[in-house]
Length: 219
Image 1: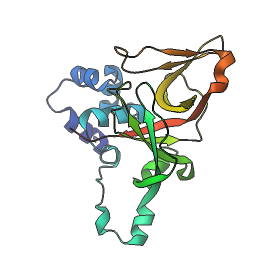
Image 2 (image 1 turned 120 degrees about the vertical axis):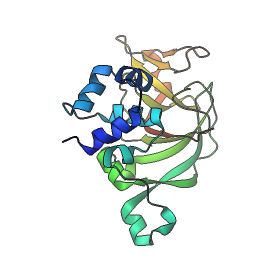
Image 3 (image 1 turned 180 degrees about the horizontal axis):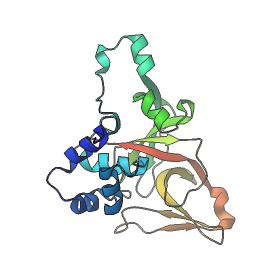
Image 4 (image 1 turned 120 degrees about the horizontal axis):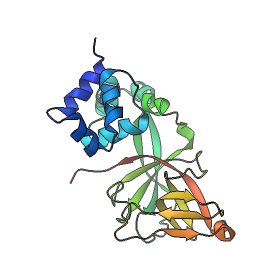
């Protein structure tokens, strides 16, 4: 019997071919077919890609549930269901550099505790900052909310991190090199070139945390 996850995945694919859907969602076709046949469990990376492409909730795709309206929850129910993650009044540049606006909490964003646990995230090590600029498009847009895990501050090749370089904060991909240098990479490669920080200048670079979620409005 087909699992509910596979049923929901087929619903998202609709009339598209597996090949077309996989290409557009940036998931390997063979991997997608394994999901559809039940031969493989989806990775979090691919789940996020599918949800991003289809503009659907990860909670719905994984569990078949939708967000419960917060205003209908009692305080106790809310605290049990959601964790409030502080959003700091810091603009993280996804462009050529943005100064700090003061590290004060601007607002809190609610995340389902079940989802955070599923991702293996420690609530006490999470923070939300806000993007500015276009260098990480189409992954991150100006004005997006960025959830960062401050416990993960060791460079992982190709992953996106919030980092401090000099006096500015950036959201960029990082790549280690054999000579000890680190390359800072933008997704918008048309307008932004990679920046190499030599090994003897890494004291200028501080990795704040890994980007684990990005939220943005549909324009």
